[in-house]
Length: 272
Image (cartoon, rainbow, N blue to C red):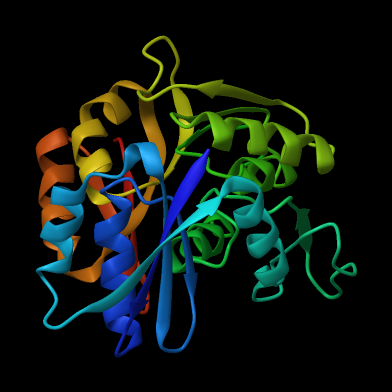
C-alpha cells in the first residue's frame, strides 16, 4: 500500500501543531516534526483532495511538497527518525534498537510504525503525565484509540486488572498486539472497533484521539462509565477547551481539570 507524504514549510511550532490537529481529522495518520518542516502521511486510498485543500486554505501562503512513498520505505524512515521519549522520570519509551533507559520508573519498548502514540506527540505526553496521578491498581481500563498501545501497556504497568484497547485501524491493532507481547504485558485485550463496546463499564477511560471523534463519542463514553469513572480526553487544542467543557456538562460529566503542553491540552472529567 502506498502513502502520500506532504512536506509543509512551517513558520513556527504553533502553525505546525494546528496543522497536525486539522490533518489528523482528515485521515492523516503519521507526522514528523522538524524545526521548519512538518511531514504528514496519509494512505493514498484515504486521501480526499477537497478536504485537504479546505485545511490548506486556512493558512496564508502555506507552501508544501507532495510525494508518493511505499509502505516499507515509510517504516524504514520512521524507525530511523525515532528517538526515545522521556516523560520526566516517570516513563521512558524506546524502540528495541535503543539502549535501555536509565532512571525512569517505567520503561516501555515499542516497534515504531505508522501509528500515533509513540510518546513524541504532546497529547500522548499529557496522557502519560496525568496517568501518574490516578490509582490504576485493580481497575478496569478502556484505551479508546489505542494507536501503538502505549497507554494500555502503561495502565498494565500501573496495576490495572483488566484493560481493553480498541482502534478502528487494522495497522494500529497489529502494532498494538506486537508491542503488548514485546513488553510482556498481561490483562490486555485488543479489538478492532470504531465505537465503544456497549456491554462493558470501566473505572478509567483513556481517549487520545481528536476533537470530532471525542465529541461524537461522549454519549458512548458515559454509557461505558460507572459512578466514579475517571475520563482522560486529549487530541485537541487549547482553543477547543470551551467546547469540550460545555459538552462534558451536557453529557452529565463533571469537569475536573485541564493540563496543557504547548497548544495542546488534556481534559479530565468524572462520572459522579
